[in-house]
Image 1 (cartoon, chains in turn purple, brown):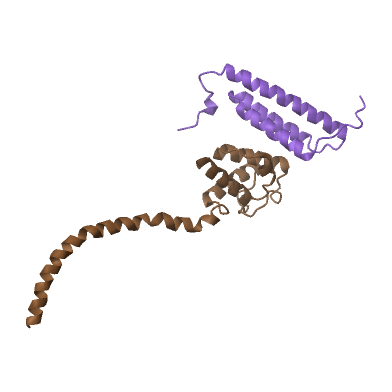
Image 2 (tube, helix red, strand yellow):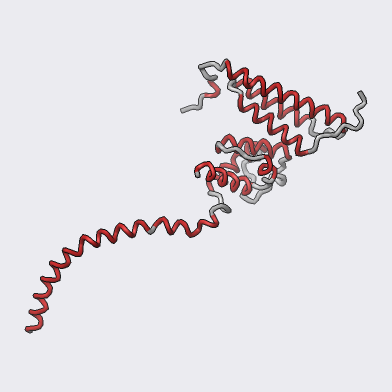
Length: 94
Length: 133
């Protein structure tokens, strides 16, 4: 399991993953899941902001990519069963 | 004296001919309003560089909220995000906030090149114009 020689992600790749996760979060129709996804990505990326070890960076990056796939799938599944009544938080005050 | 009366006689004939020319005058007034759009075209080649002040204000408000800047701090079009204490993650979040606020979609490379408030406002204006066109 000694991951010596794995390529750490570049700065641009990490920012691209961040942006993709936030974009996927917007696609959820459920308010709670949407806010959770946004909150979790922001917290996770800020938490690991100062990592320098390439193997740790690679592990965190592939973790993030796996989560992105899960989120994309779940956004589609949620949209199949979207409730007709929107959450109160989504209704803008008129 | 005779010439005067002669002139007055001519007057009446002129006034009758005046009435006939009034209608074409109305036609001329329509032409004046058509020339207005051409005045707008003159500064056209600079429109892409200048963003509206309300756009810049909205961008400033979003940046203030995201970076939790104190109310008294100065925030102009030339302020750089890095100077305000934003890191690259903050910049991505600011761009997301701007996408939601203005209903636009920013490309990956354009988003990387934003470094000041004015950059963001100009990009927003350009994308809005593209959407409207």
